[in-house]
Length: 100
Image 1 (cartoon, rainbow, N blue to C red):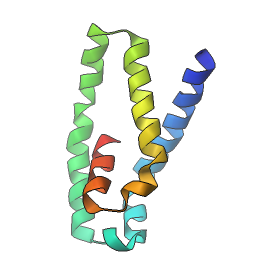
Image 2 (tube, rainbow, N blue to C red; image 1 turned 120 degrees about the vertical axis):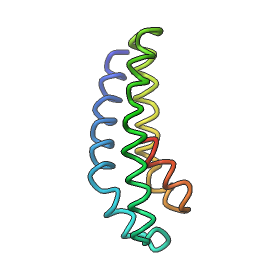
Image 3 (tube, rainbow, N blue to C red; image 1 turned 135 degrees about the vertical axis):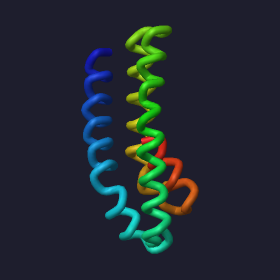
């Protein structure tokens, strides 16, 4: 079971770093997301949502480390693998960026 958590952690870190690195570049490469003002707004709001990461530490006070970290890994891995498909609409792309 430990190898599954290790593999998910590696994938999560890799996919998370890729997502943070290329949000704007990826959006500009897609025809339906190629709106500079929209991308700027989505990424700006993403910074506000990133401040909400303190919620994970609050959850660690109530629940076990495995449950909280496992949930975070599943969320980030799922978002990373479905990131391409989220670019089909403006709304889904924004939600993926905000959750990531």
